Length: 386
Image 1 (cartoon, rainbow, N blue to C red):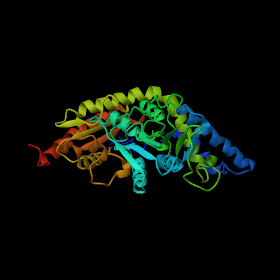
Image 2 (image 1 turned 90 degrees about the horizontal axis):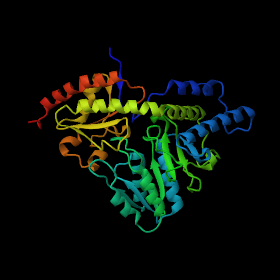
Image 3 (image 1 turned 90 degrees about the vertical axis):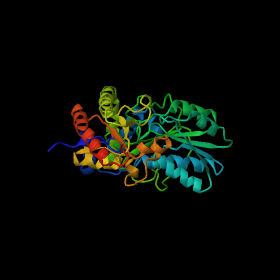
Image 4 (image 1 turned 45 degrees about the vertical axis):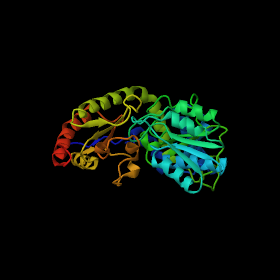
């Protein structure tokens, strides 16, 4: 039986063995509460702070600017609701049409509560409509921006340096969902990019599911999202999940050490897969092929259903996806693909392949041996293929 080929790494990644090893003592031996006053807990607190230093180092921030959370979605909600509540009822919220649901749904909830929300569009290649964004920033009054650094479905990278500088000039508070970018893009550097807040998630960079962080630049004010105890400087109440926080710190450390070597190799595999799949009839790459993550390929096969492709790939032991794992189960076409204006004949046939450092050339060979046959079979069944 062939081993599973896992190419759904934008949804979740394998936990690195080094991360598991770092976490284990905190389940059975060093299990104290990091907020306790006694020495046993105090020693654990030191491990928590070392993890904070490692996460801060990955994005070139100060440790005091890192707040640990349970995931990227919580980080996004904390940034959005915390900042908007602090700014006041007359705040205009600016986001984009292609955001992850963890940003779009909070913004739309605030719209339902009476806030003005502007969803900026994208160009046909998925890149930001910078003119529309600039026009949105001209809105009078307090403004809050939440914009992803890189798209989870297409991998398209937004010009966050430029967008953040424009927001700063307009007096807006700027948050970026960098869940897909951290550990993949060297330019995620808080010493250079003037964002106020940045969300990241552990399970996108080989830490376990259930841990994330929110970077909050010194001087940025927001109201607590979870109220209760004094943890995380009073911004995020709740007993610290020390094993997972330590795991996130170790994953951040590994990403810093390995990113320079891993990323070119991963990009080469992605490009080889892309070149092979484009030989299939009516195959279209969705999104900019220049401004995108090194690990991501989103491709449509016209006139056939992406879900049908995924079922056949799953039967062959190949894991891919049709978009965000947070919207799986929906029969609606991807809001990201629709926002780009992808032709109707291709919008339902999009597939995302996303690589990690654990993928190999043999995975690419296996996928290229299976997908053309699946596409050919489904095209023969499609009433739309002439």
